[in-house]
Image: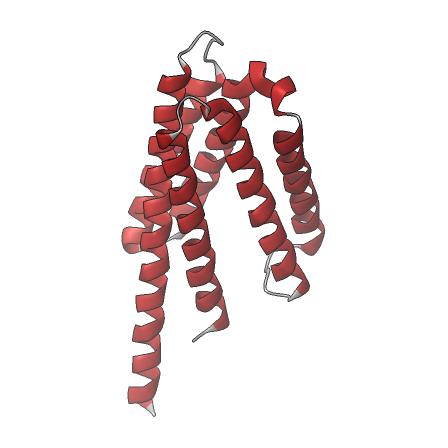
Length: 186
């Protein structure tokens, strides 16, 4: 299997499973959702940042190493802040999660522009949903019901997790097609 496609399969599979797990926790434990959201997103950010850092050291990252390293450090710092300073951050919950969803949505739209086929459609859909959720939560008053916020975030994470799992299977089938074509050409 091509190293880039194998990495993409694993990357989307791990992210998809983590997002589905976090979505389930957010939806099921609505009473403690505020702390759960901070813990879940903090852990998610740290796990993704560590995976990205490992890929950097294995030379599997194709972006500029300097910027990728800065991004990883910022992600780890954000994850640690969300894990250990959640009580201080309670007042700005909507803003933090809204900013995260908005930025993720923008990046998914950017990736959709460079993608092809069904992948483009799924990235576009999750990008738009992320931007909408981000805008809603970014300006949400503190008095919003925690249950409403948890359901919105849980639904978003659930959809995003399913999309990432679908992308993992898509890249896996793409690699099988490439492998079969290379066998036929020989």
